[in-house]
Length: 400
Image (cartoon, rainbow, N blue to C red):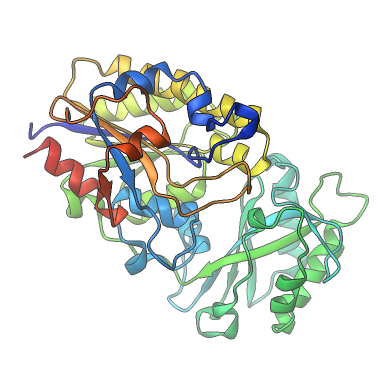
C-alpha cells in the first residue's frame, strides 16, 4: 500500500450541537447524507482535537492541524496565512492584519457589529473600495491589500515589534449583534490605528458607496508565516483546493500546489463540480494528497439559519463526497471526511469541540457506524490528540 493516495474532504464548520428545531438533532444528523453514511458503514472513525489548549478555535488554527502542522509551534496569526496565499513579499518585522469589510451601526464605542461580511459583499464590489482606501489612506506604515469578497489584508510595516502586535481585537464573526466598545478601547491605545479606522469609515460612508460596507475591521495580526515543506514532512505531493485564502495560504506556505477553481465562492452557490474535477485531475496526474475544503457550512453556521446549514451539509454530501467516492471506487485511495471545528447555530461562532472524522480505506475496518455524525464518531472512543497528528496517524494505518 505504499502508493495509497489520500483525499481529505473538509466541510468547514460542519460540526454542531443538537438543535431543538431539528427535533434534537444536529444539522449533520438531520441532513440526508447517504454518501457519508455509506463510508461510515466500514471505516475507522473518531474525533480530532484540532485546536490546541489555549488557542482560539479559528479556521486558521484548525486547518493547520488538519494539514499536519502544530499550530502551537507555527501559527503567527490569521493575516499572515492569507498573505502567504497572495504571495506577498514581506519583511520579517512586518505585521499583517486580516481586514474585514464590515457593517457597523457606528464606528465608535457606541457601535454594534451588524455584519462581519458587509452582507457577503462580492469581490467586484469590494475591490474598488479597498483600492480607494489604499489610494487615499495608504502610507509608509499601512498598506491596504485587496483580497476576495469581504476578506482583505492590512500590512503594517515594521509593526511586528510595535505595541499593536499584542492587540486582541475580536474576530468580527464572533460578535455579530454585539457592542464593539471593547474593541474600540483596544484600538484607542494606538492613535495611528484608530485614526486609520475612523478615516476608513469616513471614506466608506458616502453616497458613492452603494454596498453595506460601513467600516473596516483589523484583527488576526501576526508576523509572516513560515511552515515546513509538506512533501519533506510526509513524503507526499500535496494540493489544496479551496475558495478561501486562509486554506490557500496554508498550502502555499507548506509548498503544496494551490489549485484555483473558477466559480468557487465559499458560499452555498460554490462550484462543486469544479472542485471535484480539480481533485480528480490532481490525483490522476501524480498527486498523492488532495485537501478539498468547502466553506459553505461555516458561513451558514455564522448566519444562524438552520435550514441553510442543513442544506450546506446535504450539498457537501451530494456534490462533493458522492462524486469523488464514485470516481475513485476501485482505486487505492484513502478517503477522510471531517470538519475543522464546530460552528454551532446556537452561538454562531467557532467552538473547541473535538471534530468527528472517518477514514475509509481497505485497511480501515475497525468501525461500522449506522451513519456519520458527531455522536456516532465520538462513540467509538478513538481520539486523535493533538490534532496535527492526523496525517501521520492516517499514514500509519494505511501504510503499516
